[in-house]
Image (tube, helix red, strand yellow):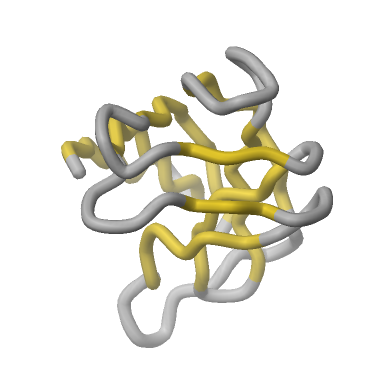
Length: 98
């Protein structure tokens, strides 16, 4: 995982590139979750946020979203799909109101 963060006012901006290693991500239905980050103690999203991400998932370039809820930032599948362990990737950016 490569990522960059910025904190502007009460907003956290996270841009990332994640490569799948060791195991495939097989989402058997839409809205399955794959965790990315946990915010530091005391920080949490003021409300749930979803942003589109791009990937080479089995459903195409836009098969994944990034979600912030509570203190977690995770990937969410938009449909039944797979991201393979060998060369699977996701890129995205999310702005989290704290």
